[in-house]
Image (cartoon, rainbow, N blue to C red; front, top):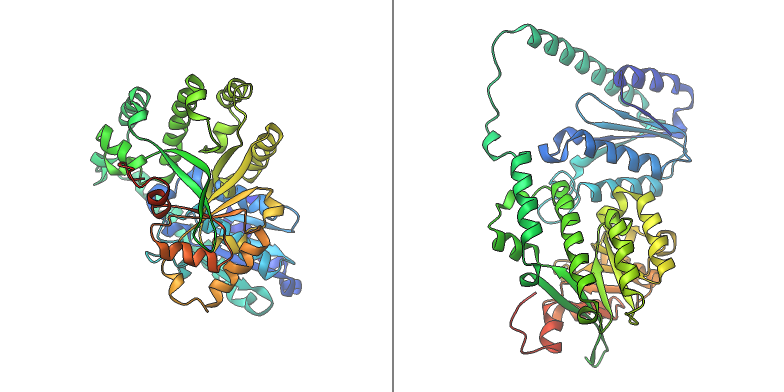
Length: 409
């Protein structure tokens, strides 16, 4: 698998023209990343998408073509539909916060990409590639003409709302000075029997982001950009580790889970944390990693997973949807637990094929390894039990475990 980023359209036309006689063994995917929101269309984010495709399809013959308009074209030989579907699914997760990936109802947006079976669509795809070359030529001409103009550029309309380095420095300062104990939360993960006997297995520790934003009087757009949010959560990870290192006996009396970025797990601060708590803590510990982080850095996740498991931690993949859980392989990814988000819409038709797919995925993963989270009602727990799930998390369980709890998760 190779990557092309210069003279892309010309090389694409040349490559596609060269496979004419063997087109039946090739497939292509056109990712319409020019339609992404501006905050998800940076060079950095496009490069992550390219790296992900290369990692997933490293053994396949073909190439990844990054076009002038940020669209990406994948050309691949002898790839099955299932392999292609998984690659597309993981790229959707990478851009899951953008409406191009999923619509408001959580359904896949068909505009995200177009698949070409070159065995039957070669002529159409070849003309499409020639059109991309023609478009790029016109854009280059326009750019050349624009450079000759004397008129100055007007500032963009949203310049006043853009995220500047100065504003970022203020946010970093506020996060480093904030009293995180005010927004520190713990929520139990529980085993629930058919008779509704509820037993707490462990507590998840986390920072309540919405309450943090309110406490610091931050503007909403600081957290609306997923990439910026990831950077800020790394700062919070450091603060969380500092807090836990200072008082391990206070926080580790019972089994707990902690949410961390992959970069945090591989950091010196985490090694310091582990060296401090290991002699003192005798309860099981779980580290949760977001599925979006996993797919954006597969190699980093594998390194972090191996490190955690070697040190004795359990690894939990967080953020799975009912669609997402059907596309992951627990043994291949090597995690110990998975968190599935409760979706009230899917429960309305228990006989739907999607529910059967979820049931099969839970069985393959292991009913004692899947946690149905965001369970705010008894209905959510009933759905999970029907799917074969034994572990649950959410406000409904919070009220059972601690009826007098005053702070809502």
